[in-house]
Every structure is written in C-alpha cells, then in structure tokens.
Image 1 (cartoon, rainbow, N blue to C red):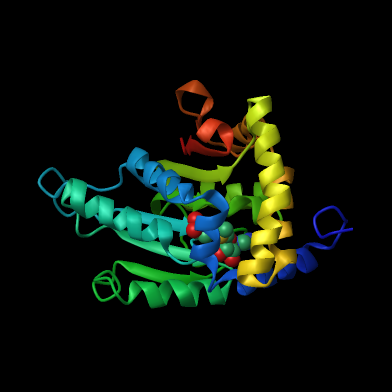
Image 2 (cartoon, rainbow, N blue to C red):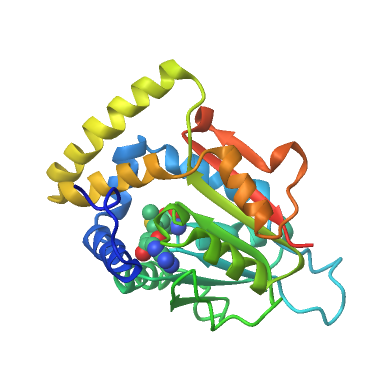
Length: 264
Ligand code: SAM
C-alpha cells in the first residue's frame, strides 16, 4: 500500500515526508497554483489579514521587545513574507521578527533565495532554521507571540507532540494559528473536490513536476487529516483556549480551514 495507509516507524515516515518536499521544492509555487487554481494565495492572504500581526510603534510600550513570530513548516517563506509585509504596511511595525522553522533543507534554501530579494534578512528580522515541529529546542519556553503553521501540520508524524511544543514556546496570551486543508461539508462540492484531488492532482504532479507519487501522497495526507471538530478538540486537549465559535473558520466551504487557540 502507499505510504500513509501502512504502519511505518516514525523515523521512516519522517524521512519519507522529507523526500516528498525535497522533490517538490523547486516546482512548489507552480504546483500550488495549479492544484488550487491560485486560491491558496487568497487563503494565505486571509489567514494573515485575520491574524493582523504588528504593533504600532506609537502605541507600543516603551522598551517592549519586538513582536516574535514562529512560522513552523514555513517552507519557502510564503507566510513569513506576508506576516512581515502586513505588520509594516498596516501597523507601521518595522521591528516584528519571524523565525521560519522547517524540517526540509531544500524548502529552506528556496525560502532563503527568495528572502534575498527583501530587506528582512539584512534587518535581522527573518531567519530560516532547520527543525522538526515536534522538537523546537532552539526556541525558549514562553518566548513567542504568534505561532503559525500553514499547510504543514497534516504532514507531522505526531501532531499532539507538535501542539505541545507550540504550547511550550508561546507566551501566555500567545496565539496558535493553523491553516490547513480540511473537510468539505457540502456533499456535492465534496464529490467534485474528491474527483479533482484524486484524479487531477497526481496527474498534474506527473506532467508538471515529473513526480506522481509525491502528489499522490499530498492528496492522501489531506484525506487522512482530522475533521474541523476533531482538530479543534486536539487543540483544546493541548491546553489551548478556543476562541468563540469553536475556534475555526472554513475557507472555500471547508476545502481549507483556519484553526486558532490561545495559550492561557
Ligand atoms: N507553509 C508553507 C506554505 O504554506 O506555502 C509550506 C507548506 S508545505 C505544503 C509543507 C512544509 O512542511 C514543507 O516545507 C515540509 O518540509 C514541512 N514539514 C513537514 N513535516 C515537518 C515537520 N515535522 N517539522 C517541520 N516542518 C515539516
């Protein structure tokens, strides 16, 4: 059977996830655009806009440390760039910092290459660190204001362990925010979506990236990921408070979903 439906040791699973993302690193953007018909950009924009990161320097407490954000599974920096851009444009915050943590050196290399065209690296406000979301030992306890993870958590071998790490590193009042593919509530849309994802996506992977298997894996990992309610339950069990309304917001009728939790 294909990876994901078999029982494999954690280290084997981890290395398979790593090889999937090594294989997709360079074609990552094109593939995302093709697979989501460009909509992933709108989801990411919405995710960041709703988080609204940034502290206006005019109202900041004098001497307070800059806003600290950790973008886990941050890959090529898509979310990090948006977070920093939003903080500057909306709040005039040009001190916020983002650490991008990702398990895959090829994705990070692509992110560093893209970041070279921005002012953030030289300002010391953006760094790329190779790390597993389940062991963020480079991040001290209670040191981060916002933890983001976009289209990454479904790949983690042990989601509960990653949630525990998120809880450890967040400051009290800090926000856990996750953007991930989820479950489509409408049965008609779900049928169309399943046809698209199981039929077209592996085919696009084969034709555009020459790699059917990796894209087959991505589709299967979406299918296996818990429902909105189940995942909100896991966040709560991880010690987070859920915002009003259950803590999630469906995007495109549940094709993607934003979950949030607050560290008490
Ligand atoms: N967040 C980026 C975005 O939205 O464009 C990248 C998402 S990409 C689909 C998933 C990323 O998760 C890959 O870069 C992969 O290397 C990373 N990843 C998978 N398992 C991981 C883990 N256990 N710890 C950290 N990163 C992981």
